[in-house]
Length: 496
Image (tube, rainbow, N blue to C red; front, top):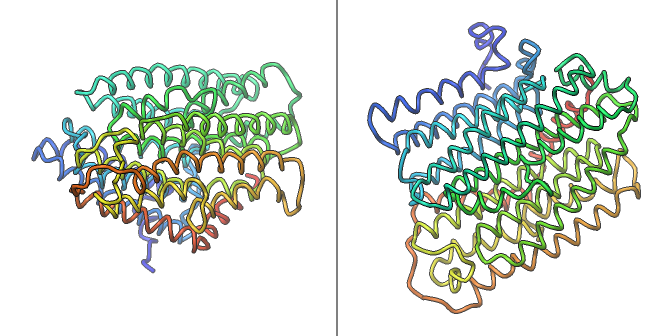
């Protein structure tokens, strides 16, 4: 293993934020590179190299535990933040990989790749933040950049409408979040997350505490498109360029869950006196049940494949919210594992849609009629991704759902009945989701359609193949990732 000790000599106290430093430098370099040669592909290749380099750096820093630590009381690098950084890097890598061959990303290419790199930088801020204001700044970097990313598809009026809706809803989300943070600061006189949690641990229930909690849940609820804060997602995913839709569905949502884990698990579990914990747990349980049910039911009636995947993504958010209802270490493991598997099965599905749009196919489900004969590999990959999302064994979605749903029954080393109803709701919803996923499979393999072969671009085939391999491997051989997630969850649950 490479000796990384020289990094401490070079960067000193800045070592815990070294990944952020490299990402900031890479982000600033992309516009300069485009200005120098006007080549979108050069920017894409540079971005891929930078993302891979940062991924290797984070992996090596995680392997050598001596790099774990805090910076200025604002950031911390630990197994949890490192693992979340790797997840964000995987999402960004897939996005950049498929973008050069996309027919929807045709203008402002230098800005496009710079914005993606900037969003990842904001996500790194969120993953490593130990202060509520740093969390807010990281979220705003991601949010404002995302509005611009959606609007870059300038020739499509749907994109303009989606960007405006996204901006308005995002502004409301930011206002609610900042209001909640200000209330917590007024009650606890600190913005340090652990400090807020410690102060809450000694408080009595007040109206200000309830209002602050609800404001934060609502503000962060917009980020993960949880019901009733989900209205923006279908319009944005449909209107944005497909690589952007996949990026938002798999990257921004995961950032939202990192926010929830950092704030609410810290506040009600890591430093826990039982204060208001059960009430917040049931609030999350209700939101989880309603979110997964509405997402799946509304998805049934969708005829546009991107809107169907949007509502499916809302339902998947409902499943992950189980971790916030149960609030156990095992539930956190299940939630994080499903976040990883969701990246590959959901982004894989979006890449299939992207590749077919580039080949001249439409976005309606009926446009997929006879696809198995026109593009056999792409049709088979789509089948795997959809069945994995539905939880069909032995694919990744089944394995992660098994861990996540079982965490509602097996809590803190014992079988309990408190959350059995939530597990049943989740299982029933998985069965419902199979119906609308099967509609797409039926269109591809049963319905008659054109027979001429579709020309799928090489970059898209490669990205689809990567996702297929990940969906299969994480389903049949999840142990290495589960062990890493288990270590991260155990570290997270250690009291500061």
